[in-house]
Length: 389
Image 1 (cartoon, one colour):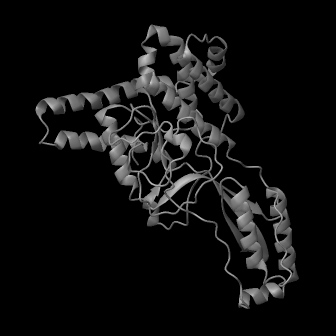
Image 2 (spheres, helix red, strand yellow):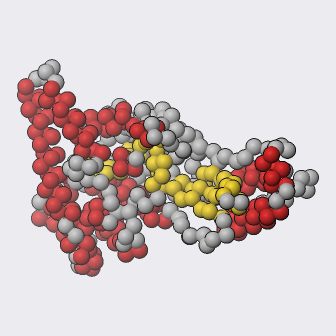
Image 3 (cartoon, one colour):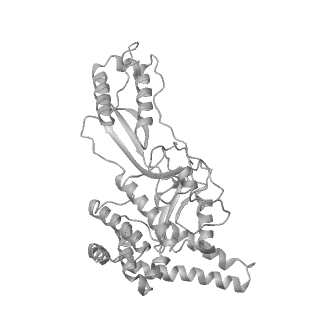
């Protein structure tokens, strides 16, 4: 992962080209960063997902395609299906439920009957879902306890992107009298993202970025080739990130900011464009807080692929690419980005919001990615605005 450099993969949309520029150094206008990766996992080419305002390099790092059963021959499994009328009823009942849910019309092969037509039907359903359903990834036919049914998997494409939210800009706003009301409103937004959405904080030892900062600091201290003056400046940068991070953690974790969220919105006075942008961000955050008061951004986290115990060490968890950080500017964050990028390049799998729907006769939970889409867009806007002031 790196921050909007020429080292990217996939395509860049026209909208993204309006803002993205080719650089070999880190840009400082946002915290939404494209991963630079030749990744071992596979991803689909996501279509139809709404682009956010902070246009960025979008990396199609993992090409995934839906899987379906191969064309069946006269095997023992087919014979067992052929001799079991209930299996046929289950198959068509599940297929009908799936078709109604996604509003598609599966093909009805005339030349073959169940179960020899399974492969053809699956292929047709897969093609329809791939072209019509945003985020759809995979369909499976499952046999479970003398019953067969379909499952469908949908995945929210995070575009192999880093979503890092800086706290030092908010610290500066809080110490500027002319920005005090705006800073307090943003503090409620940050508090929602931490306390409700569950975004990790880089000064918490359990967070992924805590370890990255710690390793970078150790390397700096042990590097005997850095001049004393340069090393002192670098150590001060780490101390600043730690000190301000600890101060802001106390403020952000204070749930009184959630209690006063609506009051701060109601009393907010817009004085300029920056205030207006922050107000819109806060309105969206408060709307999410009201609609999903107990839901975290990680509620549907799931890795792409079947993972055994050994491979579990090579999964990019969502907490690796979504987090609070110190700042997005300067050499320190440049080194952090490089370190994250290099480490995650070694991973074979990636966690993303994923929904699996079972069409087994039970009620289908109306799950969707509304919260995830709105939250990722919110983070996108937030990091852009605080880094442009």
